[in-house]
Length: 281
Image 1 (cartoon, rainbow, N blue to C red):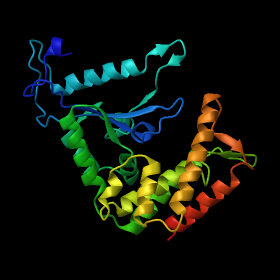
Image 2: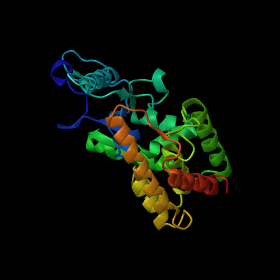
Image 3: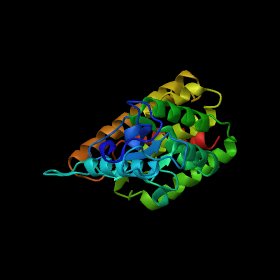
């Protein structure tokens, strides 16, 4: 890319001003077998008219978009065992209709002015996974600023509950005989939503909640701060690890995230009880 188009003007030697943000299981350091790579590509050049300095100069927006396209091509390489990774970029600003690569300024403005609560829930799981150190640091500052803002608890709870119910209605495959380990009531996503609600509710008072992106360490932090009642965090952590282990096992066998309805009943009941306590307070 640089040999053909030159580097974006104004960058020091060794700088790229480009960063890859991992979301979801990638961002949360919880990749499983057959996990998608949820990614957002950002650059930290604020001049929207900036260009590269090569003989075939192009706008930096085009330069970074082509770089992102090449990366996606590598990630989605077809091997004898199938596609290397599925890449999901729907969490970028404006989703599938948005730019493939956004400037950091555009990203911050979107998160501040347009993002829905569920997008801030997703931002909790976001972390830089590759790229320029300065761009990484700038993203971390933006993330802390957005997630550390005070929120009205009742409105936040209502919005989280509304999104969770929409997901249940469209994604929960539970039946009388089987339980959907991921989307079922008392399953993996309920734990994740409780953690995200707690972070958004209390991060402005406890910025240490923004240090981690994985559910286990976030639960540990919530417990240490006394924000979850009794041994709730410990029990939720145990249930989460059990659920994820079964989820991984099923994925290895190319099976859906479904178990018999009479399995893991104690863990599921505990999660439902925690949900009732936290989300209906």
